[in-house]
Length: 159
Image 1 (spheres, rainbow, N blue to C red):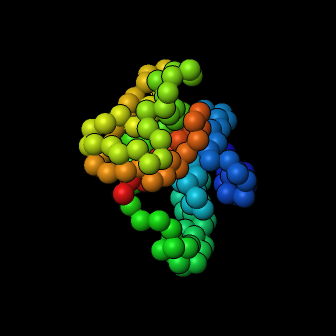
Image 2 (cartoon, helix red, strand yellow):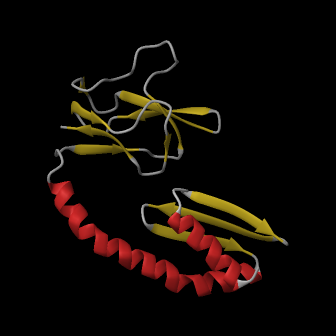
């Protein structure tokens, strides 16, 4: 894989709304993932490793751009409601109830105890219960039912 081609793939992922891309060419596997403005490159094979080294300055510039954007975002975050965040422990699909016709585990305003089931994240056909790490009241549900979630993505705000 030529470096020029690798850089064009990184740029395409960076400028799009895609969160990831898997690409294979002549036995070289490339997996690009993006969280917010950063692009992470994971490559296998000798040719891709050379390209990944060349791509490092580009990823660093994407991170510095993100750092410049963080200042206005920090002001916006301080205006957001305060509380403890329950994050997704894995990548999968978020569900608020055990089945389509069942009642949601919790709603905004519900009081919860540490260890109480808040939702389910389905990953590879396995249902994983998301339990509260805190005692408190649900002040915000940050994702929609059926939405894909990433590792570490905030799911609930508890006060």
